[in-house]
Amino acid sequence: MACVALLSNPRSTGNRSLLPRVRSYCAGRPDIFHYEVEHVSQIGDALRSIARVKPKILVINGGDGTVQAALTELYHGGHFGDSPPPVAVLPNGKTNLIALDLGAVGDPLDALERIVALSRSDLSDHIVARELIALSDGHAGSRPTLGMFLGGAGLADSILYCRTKIYPLGLPNGVSHVLTVIAVLASMLFGIRTRFLPPRPDPVRVSLVRDGQFQGRFSLLIVTTLEKMLLASRTDGTGGQPGRMKFMAVDVGFTALMRALFAAISGRLGRQEMSGVHFERGDVVRIEGVGSSVILDGETFRAEADHPIVLTSTPPVPFLRLAA
Image 1 (cartoon, rainbow, N blue to C red):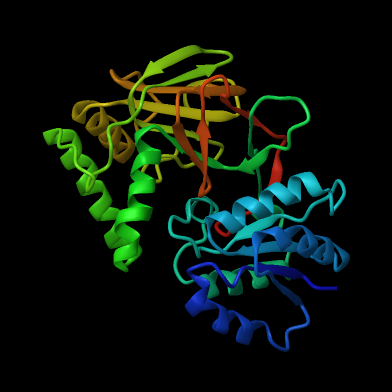
Image 2 (image 1 turned 45 degrees about the horizontal axis):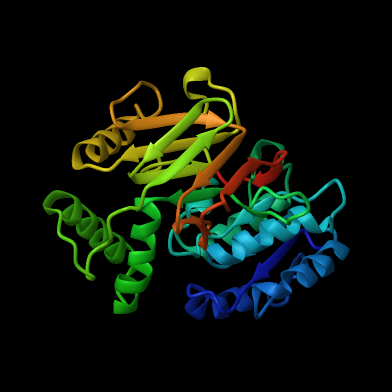
């Protein structure tokens, strides 16, 4: 029986250089079942095959889209019955938010070696429960898409700007992200509106079932079930507020954005009220707007008139955290 099942997507950008090393590492190791897919549409078949070997850990090796598709299929497919293996994510995407939250940083192969070593021991100290965000149109019978981090409003515009304007330059991810931040701040500070800078966020209305409604233009809109939110700041357990999903919105304006950033750096994010910074928890989040984009773990969705985006949280799913 394989201790570790590794699901890889060769088409993910990070795997162009990593995958040959991964294949070499897995070769001749009977405790690793390595399954490669050419397209995310094959992930259902992959998990069906992986379930037959009954792995102790399921490892996802791919970009944000691969992780999101795997989590969606893992939750809806029922391939592992009521006892799915804990999920580990290699730090192989452009943002790596889920991997970072689970303590997987640095070289992906080093993380894989650590996971294999853990599979030979008691995992109880390394298993953590995380709810997933289920995104749907709110209609009964529709199949939700699952993820763990959603960005909207100005944040989604900035991510799309980075993808379409900065990533094509072929720069390292870190440099690309810094250039995007500079462009966003320049747009806010000087109010410059050109096709070379991120656009002004469109109005959006966000409703939380327990906590009322927010409406306006936001430079940042985040919904997540991860422990870490902005600049890797921990927000779990803050304020004793009920609800699984964490929601944060920052009003458009340089002052509000700087206030949120400094609060994240100092560890105060979500622990005290701040003007222009909204932090809540909720069981159901509705996002409404005309053509307002949101990005859930790399995949883009749009809220249209009379077709809101509805977010709910799922029951907990087991994940493997590398740092106990």
